[in-house]
Amino acid sequence: MKYQVLFLVLMTTISTLAQEISSKEEQMLNFLKLNEQEQINFLEQTVNINSGTLNLDGVRKVGMLYKKELEYLGFDTRWISMPDSLNRAGHLFAEIKGGSGKTILLIGHLDTVFEEDHEFQSFSRSGKTAEGPGANDMKGGNAIIIYALKALEAAGELDNKHIIVAFTGDEEKPGKPLSISRHDLVEAGKKADIALGFETASGMNYATVARRGSSGWTLKVKGKQAHSSGIFNENTGAGAIFEASRILHSFYEDVKGEDLLSFNPGVILGGTKVEYDSNTSTGTAFGKTNVVASELEVYGGLRFISEEQKEKTRDKMRAIVKNNLPQTSAVISFSDSYPAMEPTEGNAKLLEVLDEVSQNLGYGEVKAYDPGRRGAADISFIAQYVDGLDGLGAMGNGAHSPSETVNLETFIPLTERAALLIHRLGSE
Image: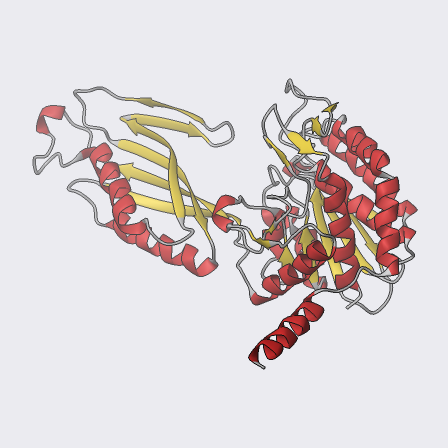
């Protein structure tokens, strides 16, 4: 008897989780299979246009290609220019309003890390692997967005969806202030019910429900310049370098250790005179071995999984900085960049839908990817307003390097998965 009960429970669970592929979804899948080469050709076309963040014309040119495709699908599009002071090309936003389902925001970006003077400029293919600047991060993800929407349109399921597409033009190096460069994305996030980010996938069987935020910190230390023979005495004290060493060691011993928290002193300059240029990340230091150092500067980064963790960590660092060695002083300041995408219950529920889609397609289960292994992304700016998933883009290797590749064998399966995910979420 107990085995019969167990069997019934098991069958009920399977029937609950396993939604059959509908006839409309079959039409989407057939469209994508028939247009596989066209999608790859479209990816090649976009990759062959340099769109390094600071190549403003190139970013716009890529944006216009996507604009044409979205308008053909019935989207209202708008190019959002940035003020000249930001030195950024702008963003492409598009929207289609239909039906009474949930509003879905799809996020990609037009720019790459490869500027016009970089040696890596063109798309090439060898079997099921293609190489090119931004092929993976994230023109591959953008092509998945476009062709997932085309698949919906081919099945007659696009007109009854409410979808916003946001292609930012400066994800790799956001324009400052962020209050301007990310204003339109934040407003779209507030308007949406669900956000889906198409940054690089971490495999067919993982998706991102959380991302760590990132911020910067600057430590400036002062000591008393004097002859080195007097160091440690009451009048001369410890000097700037010993004080900075104390602070950094205390950070390592007393702040390090929390799950998903990391901080890194990336640049340090010390001596009797230091200069640092944050725009070029270069600096100089002058000093002598027989002179006690009077100045020291450290520039670092901080990664965190929540705003609470970020603030607690900053408070600990401030307390350490205040406890100065003799004849020294120190000040630490912080700058915000990307907020955290916290792992919420709503994000987890979206993962369940994606997992169901993947299993329906025969691609296996999808689990949450370790947020400690992912960097920051645009979806983080809206994570406090809307449930979301990220890492839905293309698979490949070597992102941000001259050997960046995209795995074409998984390109269509990932697009299939995206199309069905958008369809099901937008039909709820």
